[in-house]
Length: 246
Length: 330
Image (tube, each protein chain N blue to C red):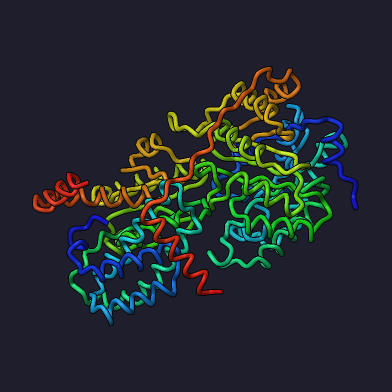
């Protein structure tokens, strides 16, 4: 981990978090929940620090190894479940904490006529793991439902999935409806699914095609960062600096 | 035991030609987005029969029933879960009509779309019962064998194999989809698939769907290396990769491309060769020609098995903790 704040933590705490990340990597839900409690009690860590150093950083490694073909869907699902268990402990504490910066809110769903669930859920879990608030609308979602959810949750990102060549054109319909409803400008649109391609994404006016869940997380983060950069020069400098660091 | 027509034909013909895509053909005939293809077996039997016939005319030895989404779990999404027997029976019976005595009928079984425990809610027993229910309908309709296809999880395959054997006395064939770095979505490698399935007594094993003929070739090469004695290999590749052009999706594998793929499959010792998404009777006709024509004179695949990722401090550390856990558990 090359986080400067992390490097400033005492050695024993760094080791504690690394062990927690390793347990998350191996999908050990009980151990990760126990570590969350231990961090709060024995190490007097705040919920935001545990979320960042224990869970988000751990899921980042899972995401990278998934992208690189070292881990596959079962391992990622188990890690996400472990994270979810820990989040149940942290969530009530996080709502009070002011130091948590949410990455953003994402509405995701599989488009109308399409009933494929697994890949989309994986994307949802990985986005949650990366610190996004995720509203998962499930399968067979029509434009009205997407639009209502985007409004209700004041969401930043819309993620659409389609696994069939016959249902993917519906993504275009949704994007057109977003424009009609005046939501297109403020919504980042990500699309994915087996038959979806970059050219298709471009053709229908989506912001980004995501090859897999790891790419979706990267795209979501990058596009949110670019948006912040546009809205405030100060945040922009931060983003540019981060890029240089990388 | 029912006579094993699949193996009789394999023995007499040596090579068998599968068929091609069903879903896209139904859509061209007017199946609307999101409609259940299996319902057309009873509402539009002429259309389904016509597609079977087109593949038979193209030279397919095997007609695959229109029952891919025919488990109660898939049909439930269309509120058709109470019609499993009827829709699967009709799928196989229509195929039987077209296939007659000379061709074989494969009773297609696809995934439930649910994750099995511990990843998801579905138990082995529930999955097995659903597959058994489907197999009963396929067998009654006259299928010659059960074709469990497009699978990614070995747990689900196990449920499907056991279910098919519970619901019928037909031979069971399994093809999995290796579309993620030459593994299935759930991380199963071709070697692991062929060895595990052979251990369960499955005699015809292979790959279908996936990322086009080039990747399928690599997958089947890996499977051929690891094939236990007596296992027959099967491949049904997509017709290339999907491309979006001027508002329409098309697959880039032309009939000549699929003919070349057929020849390379033959050279690898694959005995049952067909196609999947994006293919048409035209593709199958070209593949028929390649199957009946001369074998490739010089085929020397030189795929390199990817070296495992080198260990790092992090992998060593995790491995040490796993070993410690295992020791503590003993």
